[in-house]
Image (tube, rainbow, N blue to C red):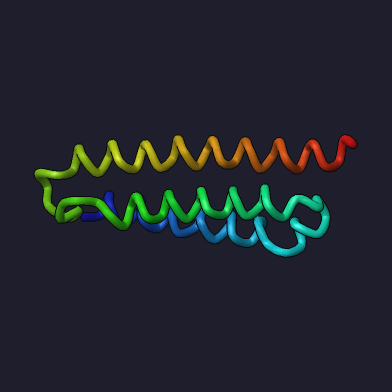
Length: 94
């Protein structure tokens, strides 16, 4: 149970940070509102993936399934992070 709660706390922090970054200020600075909205939608999709875990996440027998699911979340969030960084880099290098 502790592992799942720690992972959910990490996910919450990551999601908060993304939504703070992917706001109207970034849209205005980059002029890429559509691309920012796409990244925001991808973050929301990752949240849905965690929310829709098909088992009782707190049962020991599903621990491995949860670990795999959360590793996928981290990997996908890393890809989103790289895409956002690339978008920001492109904006300021032009």
